[in-house]
Image 1 (cartoon, rainbow, N blue to C red):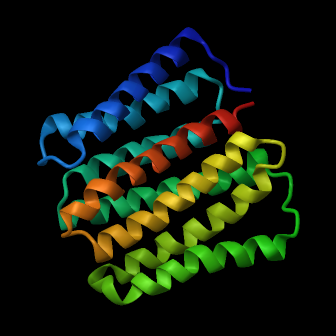
Image 2 (image 1 turned 45 degrees about the horizontal axis):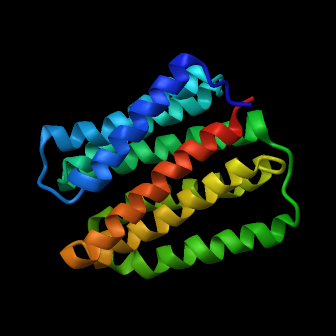
Amino acid sequence: MFEYTPLADAALAISVVSSLLYVVYYQLRAVTIQRALSKTVATGALVVAAWAGGVSLLYVGALILAVIGDYMKSLRTERSLGFAIAATVGMQVLLCFWFAQVLWIGIEAPLVAVVGILGIFGGGFVLIWPRLGARKSMMVSFAVTSIVMLTLGLGASPGRPELILGVIFYLLSLILIGFELVFFSDRYSFLRISGPIVWMLYYSGLILMMIGGAG
């Protein structure tokens, strides 16, 4: 169970306020230090909350990589996006170890679960593949770690409803951001709608995995 200590509560409060500030005000604005800080403080404070709340150090490490990835994505350059993808791959690898070594129970109907994940995530990846250009080699490792992580998440979440909901939210954020980056990156009207949805799915997924995976 997640330990709601004074430090964990304070870190969660800072994280939620920063997240709301980012999604309501900064997300669709120009690149600034304030915008980057609002995003990275939201996930950075979760690092403190996870550590203070007694969550495995594997998840704490995954959140640290998430902070790096979020900061790099906030810079909005082609080079920083490459660093962000690499950090996210590292984050997902640590989540794989966390699910497999600390939380693993087993998957009910594993074939159905794996086929379902491959169908949902793999199908979306195939659709965006022709539009990836020079990112193709990097995105292969991202897709593989995503599929493995999501599969292991199903085997780690029986009896942990918050954890499975967090895994599902994270999956939905990956699918939506993939289509956003490839098909709608230059359509502001779409980004005004999809951007906040992607962030809230991703951010909520991190919090739910943290709370559901504690103890």
